[in-house]
Image 1 (cartoon, rainbow, N blue to C red):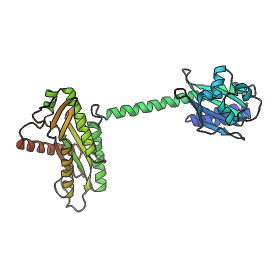
Image 2 (image 1 turned 120 degrees about the horizontal axis):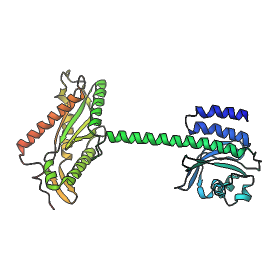
Image 3 (image 1 turned 120 degrees about the vertical axis):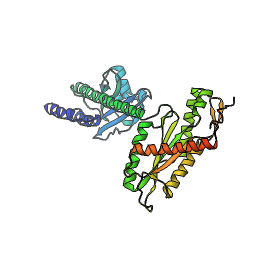
Image 4 (image 1 turned 180 degrees about the vertical axis):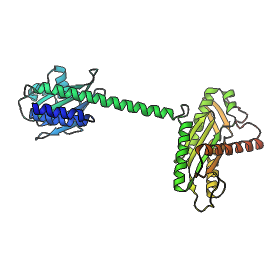
Length: 360
């Protein structure tokens, strides 16, 4: 027993997770009980399933890891309900368990693994296919081991919950709540990342500003809830039209930004300015500009009201990444967008919402 306690005191502090702790415990449990299989299970009471997560097998009988059985058919459930931890004759005691009969279990001992609040998380078990005596200290040892496993399992689940909560908070911090698109902060980070990548690759970056002309008229005449729905539908249409490598985000109000990789700058004369005004990079910018514009044109069904929209003002630029900051790149895209907006106003003075007339 002294050797066992020494092994236990060395195992517990060094365990980084439930598996690190439980596998040595199963070895120790097997040594003490002399039973063929020792194993740790988890229990999903909602699904009604018990699953063997970790197992140690040294004899003819094998309890495989990953084995999942109906909770109502298990020895563990029967033992818990009867307040009985062990038996040397499973057939006589719980002969109605098909799972035990198929596995060939004759000698069995188990203890519940519970959380701090008493929630049943799983079991720690030992079993053999033959009749084997159960030492008096086995039950107390099982209780100790199951308590240690329960504490570590609860801690591991808590850490996992905290990690998931932190990830969710980080997602919220970078996501526009209305459209589900990346927000201003996420877009700015992406522009910086794209500029750094392009500088290494010798390519350019495409950045576009998108402004929904006449959006105020939509809100005023159709109501803010329909204005919100219009923004969501615009976001969906743009997302479907853009390339998989592009990031579309909403930076506030009726303004969106798209950023993505551009073409190589090899073959062009040395670019001295941030804005690339020639060659295939410029053509790629104009192509993306046209695709994004067309994606915003057309009919929108807004909660029972019909809207024919003439399209957003979209300006896309090809940016030389060398020496260009994210702020400068976004400013150049904004300038191009306003250039487009002024040209649209000169050619079509009427609001682009088709006078904001919505049919009933």
